[in-house]
Length: 376
Image 1: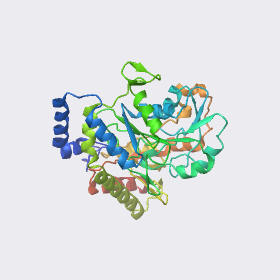
Image 2: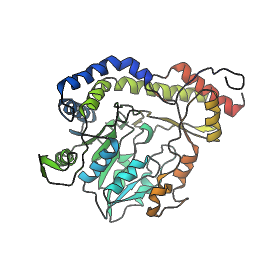
Image 3: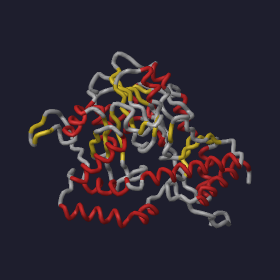
């Protein structure tokens, strides 16, 4: 009960329980096969998943690693990024993007975003290029690819895609993971394609980088107990690969459903003339896979509390831009340096988004947001 009313619906911001009900038996069978095989690290399940991702992205090479953060770090290492280098990225993203740059000894150089897309503004990025720039690391935030074609007009060096949230997205018919020189994917359980734990992948068209990545993920070794580089332990385990191989069969269907949900949100807000929110933008030539359906909202925190009071879960990604994070204060940035990112952090609100969301639940969310702004 809430103020004498029963919830009309109880809608989480995200849940895996409905998905597991659908695919549970197939996943359990795949996991049992791994257990019976006794091959738990790398092995045929990992190789099969790597080959499928390489084919899906059209890159030729995909290297499975332990998680998305390592995927970013190892992609940077393969590209030769190290101490004294600078890597241009955005402050409006998850901490791992900048953290991975710092792990290499390089310096993250932030540049502001486009408020319509939440992605790197190519014109602003071009102004950050210096003789020390070794790479750009644009983020495909919330499932929409950054405009790497536009970045290429300003920068001829290495571009690494942070594609953690964008598997299946496209830019002018080119899939995420294929537009940059390297790309890093995360298969954290909440991602559009999620494991039952941590997992990641790096894609590239460069065979030498692929060879180095396979070595770096096993302590820099190609021959057992012989180490050519200082690598790390970042092997994708076979159980996670088995889960992902099953889930990959459903990804296209799940993506279509996410896009249908996003369109239903859009139509509902337009029909109810909700003008106090800014809806996600999908520029011409892009496809959005809606890892999140993120609006910018006036009175964001009051709206979130209002929705919670009516059984609707929401999430704020991200409430504090990276240039303002205490752990990164030594980079020397201040409040006001990136006004669009700072505006986004104060306005963004991610609404419920997962493929099993029903039309009735989407309509209820729209109805409650309209009621908040229109007083009934």
